[in-house]
Length: 191
Image (spheres, helix red, strand yellow):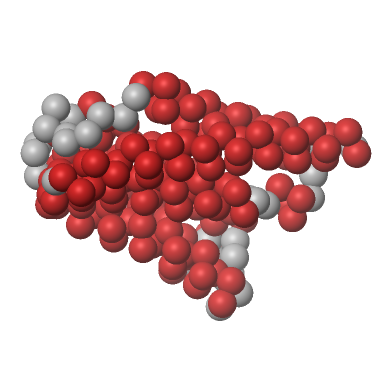
């Protein structure tokens, strides 16, 4: 009985989150090895797993405590590693300003740190669920990264429109951070 208990966390959604976590360093390696096609394909695969893991967990009622922590860690690692590598690799077609990387990193640190504070205060997990703005920010990061790949592969149209996408994603990211801070403050004040 104990043996099966140890493996109950290993569900398909959690395996997809683990796959995304393991893809992050491979994508970074591919980008710095100038294997852009491989990095792009792996990023698309990882992005699909991000949508699939939550969908499958809800549809088949296989949500686990491990998954509640593993999924956001995998998301953050996957997106931050890829975005950071894209800003550092010399062959990138567009440059992302350093302040954006600071904003994204700061947003993630504040969200994780705030989540730990709320968890330490014994908040209900439902109260700490990601907001619509938070989900939009995650999708925005994926779109931005894909746009950066398209800038590399397809050139002028994507390069010329890059900053429209970039500032849209930066705006959503900032709004989601402010919303998270406001929501967390309200939860703490209620406690």
